[in-house]
Length: 64
Image (tube, rainbow, N blue to C red; front, top):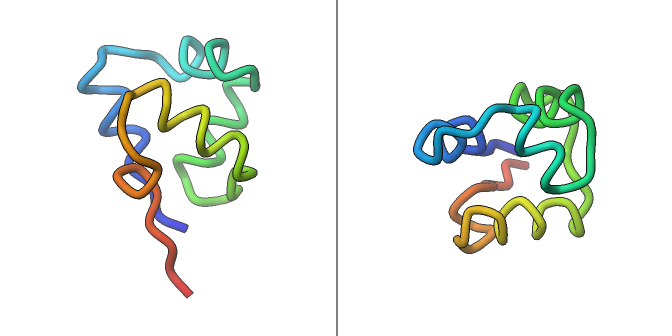
């Protein structure tokens, strides 16, 4: 799954650590998601989307 978390973090001047703290995960989890090594749970994906006040589709793109 592709994502645009890094782009949204940059637009909001937010570090991986700060985002991780806000959504209740570790910085390493955010890093792994950004690099495409880990797909977040649906719950976590919605938390991230809500944090940036966008739809989940604006951040995550599914690729088969």
